[in-house]
Structure formats: structure tokens, C-alpha cells
Length: 637
Image 1 (tube, one colour):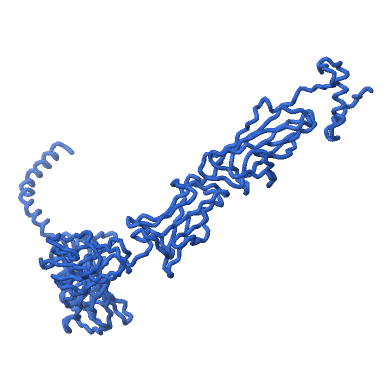
Image 2 (cartoon, rainbow, N blue to C red):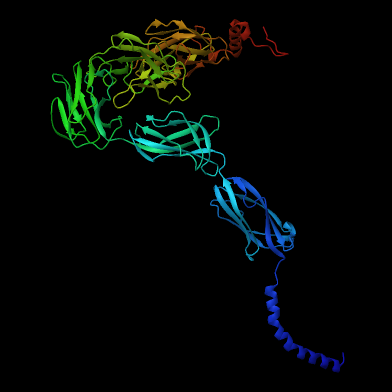
């Protein structure tokens, strides 16, 4: 481009600049007026004006972006919003169309939950004129799925209330129902309607109503349930707290058994109640008087009443809600108690009886031991459990004919069948046939009457404890000094051992056992008396604390020169259980020598003579003791 052409171009641009500036507002106006999309309205499929549909049913509603010519606009990219006049309607969230995916068409889920006449609106958020409006949508109730049961949250015992039973659909709308229902409640006592037929159409028939009256009060809420019995599997419930009614009378009761044991503290309970026997707290501030029958031996002990005054056999005070009065009678008799001052339901008669066994005064012990726990030897030991029954007054008591006494114990303790040693006095033998897995665990023995444990008034069970004795319970010691335990082959020897115990338990049936080596045991004795042979050992006399047994054992050594001479000594019970530790007794051999009666020392004999004497001794031993000659070895004559 030459210089002249350049100047003409600049001139033309300058001439056009005012025209461009002047035209800018027009261009701007044109931008706002021109539509951003060809969509002019929405078309809905799946829901039309005047439609009727059940509540709770999800509908597939298709939204189409439509042009003025009635075709779908595949390039629509606006954001739409659903709205409805129907309460609780489940509508889609705002949605922005994606042209590359939706192509102007999208399916949504819409659910109406409230029955009635409603409207639906779908509208573009940016261009409100792009919309679709569906008027006159009729939503009908769905099928019944449960009962809505209405009842006062708090009721009063004895008062009649109205119970409403409303069939509802899945969305909670009242709906039609035709069937039969059954009523039940968790309240202890209540007057409920019988099984009843219900025919109900919303806005056409009255709500089903039924009378109900609760009689038993309780601090926690009670449930009343209504259930369809025609196979429709429909039910519903309501809860209420039942309060007591107004004060009506005083009930007199007792915590004592019937008959009540003499000399025991017997408690009478005064309880203010309504007409339906529910305890009440709102009581008129009127003194109440409790009296025992005139001439009875019942004596007052104590009371929770705030007494203003009292004189035997009566107690007077102000009853707030409940009170306890304790009486005692040492005589076997029937005593009637009466209440005055407030309306009393009925008098109460206590039957006091002597001779009823009492765990409080009865005695349960082991006759062999006063220790707690009492030691019991594994297998060989035995205890005698003794129960002496007394009544509350401390007098001897016997079991009634309908009562049975037995004894029980923790395994592995074993008890025998009880024997009545005297009236009201029972005994059983307790043994330990095997050692428990935990020898340190304390075991127990206890009596039962008709398989029920005996308990003191404090609740403590009557029982005695046992300590298993699975280890040694006696001591064995060797009395023969070590320097005296010397023997030569074939010699008769003696040794003394002592068996003692420091335990209160008497050991009977003990057996002294020996395991000799190079010895032949001849016999055993104590205090000059030979001990009988038993089970490979010698039976010992009874062993008691402070009276040790000294046992002398006689034996003969073998004639073998190189034989070790010793024995093991211990004590077991008849079943073989170890009662003492095991001791080993070793004998030393004397120096080999020959005494020929000439006063000569063996050390002075010629070596050849000593050799011949040794050979002579060897030749006199049993054949099994001869030594085999080595090859090439000979004995010169």
C-alpha cells in the first residue's frame, strides 16, 4: 500500500467513527430484545389438568422445552423450578438442562401426599414467561396402611375416656376403611371395647369413637393397641399415663408369712388407696389409729407414723400415703388388727405360731472344727455338718410334715443324705473325693428346706465354708542319726522315723510306705507293737495333734558289695494320697575286713589272704551276684 492509499484509509475511518458511536445504543437495545433461546413455553407429559391420582404415588412427569412453532428446542439450557399449592408435595430440585444430554427433554418424579384439589407450576428461573401450569389436580387418599389412635396422654383410673380410631394412608391422610378391629392394652386392668366393625369414608361418615376406662394406675405410660382382624394387616396405638383416682380407703396388709413366727418382728403396712386399689398420695389430714385386739399379747415395737400419742395396744398418727407398724408376739395365738379414723377396707388377722424354724437362731456347724473355713483333707478327710433348728424365740423346733431338709455343697465336695440325730437336729457327712482345679478356692456347705436356702433376716445365707487340703497335712522326719546309718552286706539294720501333725484334723488310716534299694524290709513297729501290713506298707495308728508317732523299721541289707543301700519313706491315706513329704534314707557301707577271733587287724593280713577271703565272700553270694571273668583272666588255686 502506497502513502496516498494509506491517507485515504485513515480519512474514511475518521468519517465512519461518528456513525459507529451513534449506533452503539441501537446495538445494545437489539441485544436485550433478541431472545437468548428459541424456547417459548414448556409442555408436560404424565400430568394434565383435571387429573385424579392417589396420594403417595410417584408420577413420571416429562418436561419438554417447546418453540413457538410447537417443536422441541434441543438447545435449551435454562434452569427450571417446580412449585405446587399442595402441602407436603415431593417435588424435584431446581434443574439446569444440558443440551448435549437432555436435548430439550427431561423426566422428573413428582409425588402428591395430601388429598384435595391442587395446582402444579414449572417455570424458567431466568425467563418467567417460559412456563407450564397444570390446574385442578385431584389427589385422592391412598389405601389404609395404619390406624391413627388418639387418646389423652394422661388419664385417671376409673374415668371413662373416648378413643378415636382413624384409618390413614401411607402419607398420613384419612382414608376409607371397612373392617373389624380388636383392642388390647399393657395396662394391668382396663375396660376396653369388644371387637368392633368400622365403616369409614372421609368427609362422609363420622370418625370411629369408642369408650375406654383404665383401672390400674402406674408411673410409666401404658399402650393401647388397635388391630385389624380381617386380614388387612393394619394396626395403630396410643400411650397414656394412668394416675390414681381420689382417696377411697386404707388397706391393711403384712409382709410377714402366714403363720407368723412367734418372737419375730412382724410388719403391718397401711396404704391409702383409691376405689380401684391404686396407692394415692392425696390423703385427708385425719388421724388414723391401728389397734390390736384387746387381750392379745401383741406388743408394739416401732412405727413410721409420726405418732401424736399411742397406748398399747393401739398406735395413732397422721397417714400421708403409707406407713409401717412393727409388732411382736411371744405367744402362739391369732390376733386381729383394725384401722379407724380413715375408711378401712377390712381388718387383718395375724396367726402367730411357735416352733417355726428360724435361720436367725438355728445353729449350723462342723462338729470336728470351729475354724472358718474348716480344713478338709483330700480323699481321707471327713467333716460332719450339723444343723440344730430353733424357732425365733430360741426354743427347739422341728420340721413340719410337709417340709424336707437336705444339704448341698460346692463341687467337688460331696454330702450324704441327712440323718435326724435328734428332733430338730440333722447331720450329714462332708468329704472331698477329688481335689478342685483351684485348690485355694474356698468351698461351702449349706442346708435347704424344700430346696430353698435358709437366710437370716439380713438376707445372709446360712452356710459353712471349707478349705480343701490337697497338699501334705502331716510331717515325717528321720530320727536315726546319719552317722548310725552304716551297714555291711547281709546285715540286719534298723531306722526310726517320726510322723506328726500340727493340724486340728485327726488323720486316720495312714499307711507308712517304703521304697527300699539294697534292703529287704522285715517289719515295722511303734511303742513295741508290730504294725499290720497294708497295701505295700504298714498301717499307722490314729494321728492327732501333739501326739507324734515314732516308727521303727527293721530290714536286712543284701550281700552285694557294690549295691547302694537306701530307702524312701512317706505316708499316704488308704486311697494312696500323699499325706507327708517323701524322705530318703541312705546307708554307708562298712570298711571290708575279716575278724578271725585272734585279735589281729585285717590291715595286717597278707594281701593274698585278703584276696582269698573276698573270693570266699563272693562265692557265698547268690549266682546273680558273681562277676564274669574277663578273657585271659584266671584264678590261681
